[in-house]
Length: 404
Figure 1 (cartoon, rainbow, N blue to C red):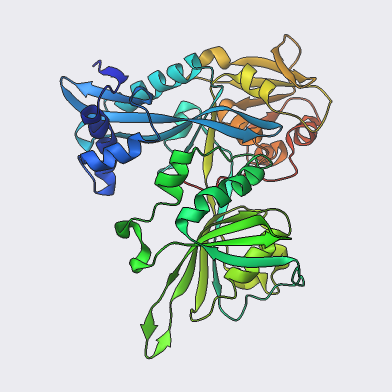
Figure 2 (cartoon, rainbow, N blue to C red):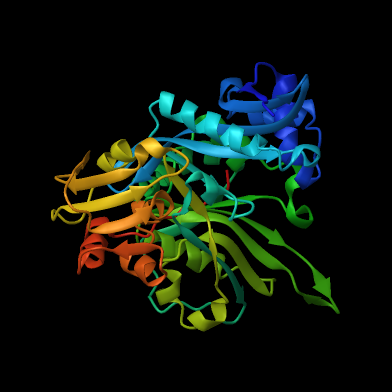
């Protein structure tokens, strides 16, 4: 069967397309208030809807991002609210939505698409690959001491959510521009998503707090957190929930020194932390942190030539890749990376891989050697995997601190 796939044109269609995925989160159809709120960061024309007659039965959105890759930020589609109603599953609607969305991404000159997957197995069918990992941490009070001495120039102060609008974005941008996997935030994004604190989104009613570390009087790190207070048998069994915490080198540890020193709780909890977080080395008892590893950002090279040419490389030695891409077959073929550019070539390939695995290499989150050991990348010339490792490596592991 064929389905009409087109961008939404008004808030009614927009809410119905959102409701396709919202159904699985207990929110179908999306009410007008929720649709209006989401529409602040997603234009009508970037949310594609699938129509069965006049009924909207699926949707797929793409926010307009500048995503940091090794070397700096580039245009990227931030894929979100993708879903098909359970009444219309297994009919090819998701594939049709994905195809039209990726073609639209390409028309807009965005060489990358990125997403967080509710079910990680779905999107590999469309060329996405796991590009970054994150960690969750639960640390019991009493095991929170740091090995490094305090920075005497650092001071922490609590600020209001309103004051945070001016203080936090410059800190975030400094971290973003040096960290693959992070994306830009508009003032509307900060106001409507990061600093908003509606009562229905609070964990056990706990309000959102903001702490800022200043070094020599200048803002250098920030944290968004909640203090969730619970009492059992006259003892406090609550916790501190760290929503987001980041900052300049050194100041970030002072921020965590403050967070891990908050009293009247029994544990500290955080999610979406980078896998190379300095706490792993700075804690006196890192084993007690109970870190759990999980996938975060998935990436899709929509235009292989443009995407590979947009990032920087840690090695000048050329490498020839044989890339397979069944969903966007014009990406397939042999590509030579040399001088910071990727061009088609007739040279013999040295590594063979699917576009999914190319995405896993792209931000520096994984090495070619580990993917060879997993049987997903094939070494056609001895030593090619090691050369690819040197080419794609980054000084920081990719990190995306927020589900979009």
